[in-house]
Image 1 (cartoon, rainbow, N blue to C red):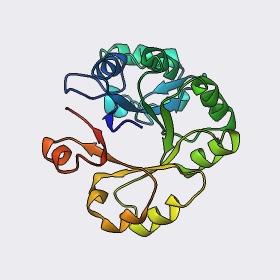
Image 2: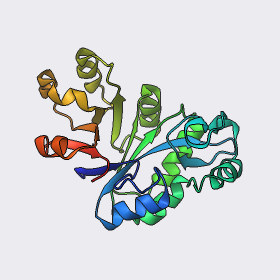
Image 3: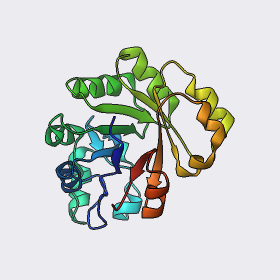
Image 4: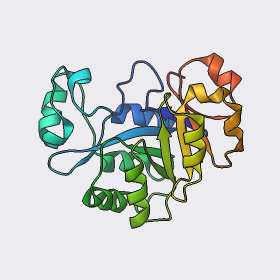
Amino acid sequence: MSHSIIHRGLAKKRFKENTLPAFRYCFKKKFGIETDLHVTKDGKIICFHDFNLKRKFKINKLIKNLSFNEINKIAKKFGYYIPELKELINIAKNKHYLMLEIKSSFSKEHLSKLIEQTKKLKFFSITSFNENNIKNFYKLKKKVILGLCFASTSSVQKIIKKSRLKYVNILVMEKKFLQKKKLNIIKKPIYYYTARSKEIRNKYKNRNLIFENL
């Protein structure tokens, strides 16, 4: 797996997060990317971080209650285009690593659609903070790299326990855990988010870091 993963495609401050121009720049520079997945009201899997549009577009509406076209009609007013996952897969051309984080709770139908859209990918993983997403994905398809994500409030004991689950291949956690030596007993790959300074990148250059603003 790539050690050079860009958080939401934000390789430079001038880019908008989770957008095709940002992703294209990362791929041009030979970086993989981490992006977030939601499902729209009309069943489109899109690359977008938040559960609603309030932070980005000042409108308190949930992604799940809006169609793909409705979301992009709003986004367009702010100079955004929110892409579908299949658009990202198309520009990645099976040459660049994709860490795909499921943000919302995916139904079996949505997971099946995700499996269908990623079936030809060679370099990717599916991750989520929601353990059920990972467990249910595993039930449908086992030969995929699956990762469980942890917030800064997670305990070391919980992380170690969850690392032993058969459907967890990698772990993704907040960068504060870089200093937790007890996690060294975990034999599975660990990715740390989000490295936003040269100091962190230089200090932990031998770790798997998810970057911004290189």
